[in-house]
Length: 480
Image 1 (cartoon, rainbow, N blue to C red):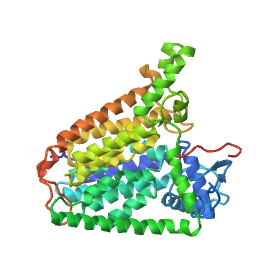
Image 2: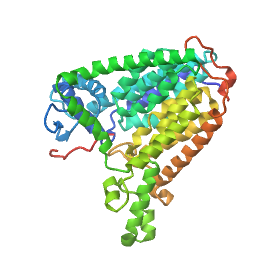
Image 3: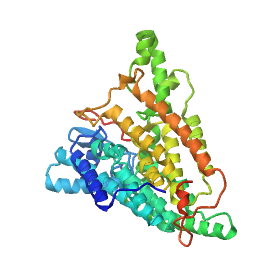
Image 4: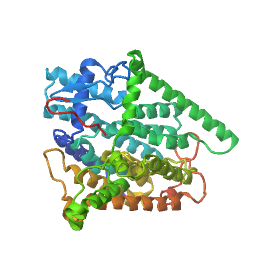
């Protein structure tokens, strides 16, 4: 059974402490990614979202937006821009001229902070419905996310906006398990149209919508998937209609394809490709720096894929993509009989973690979705708590080692304290943790057993025992 959670008053107090920590961090400058969010907020609130990608042109125009001495194009889908437009409209009304300030920084960060509050509530509600008595598991789920150092550093401190897609993505999974197929499809579409990374959860949501292998359950599963598809089409049509009316569809497609053109093995994600980056940079530096200095110096910047090809190596994109997809598919196959929310959240975490550790062009913030998914699983299945805390610590370290508490703030742990760059050791630890995750996943889910169908309308809840078993300042880099 789940360990006792905090009593009601302590739970509320801890929620308030987490809120105070987040609010206090809002004025911090964050990473360089905050600047494009400010540019987009200004452009969306002054000229509208539909034409932000550009309109027409051969080849399609890639519109450049200028503000405060900075310039940036747009590479996020429309939902994120609509949300940033709200910030821009409020801020522009209060501060004519749209000056750069700590208030604007806080406003941009306030959106994902609100989404994090929604995630914490959704985790509490979903686990409470699964385990209505006692409430310890639900409180654990909410607090494990809300007080998680990695989530606090990622959102209010550094200013990443991944919570904006994580909330509807998690909602899509919960809705699918609890029998609201059309809502699930709509939420998943909104998540993908906030940040395309949400598409990683699509196969897990599909598993949640499936009902089993009998003829009757197959029909029910197909019906649920049809309703989900209808919900996704409706939500997508509402969001994308203004872009289509403006004649900006080719421009929008071009902007979305830019995600695949990031020219780097690893965008400062502590993963397998950061190890390759370290080894290749060190090996080619030995002639100039000597063996010891080459291998003990920190990795200064990501290694471009084009540089790898120039050195005579094959383009790693196809092989890395196929291998990553195969590892994801293995986990989904192992857990294909799972229908309870905790198991499906675990599979979602597996897919996202495999992507983070093995895929090319991954950035450090792409870890984010794993935290709420594993928090849900760990609340219901305590045997997964060790992995949850390990991965949470890994995410927090990944952020801190590269960025500390943000630009001009500092407090990053010294990367040379461990001899070989600490980010490389962290990458090795993530590869090992993925292997451990795989062993635990197979041990837990491979052996066939009674199908768990918790949460689906008209099905029994799990037994308690299951919890065991270009401008003056220069152009802006692309956002992550």
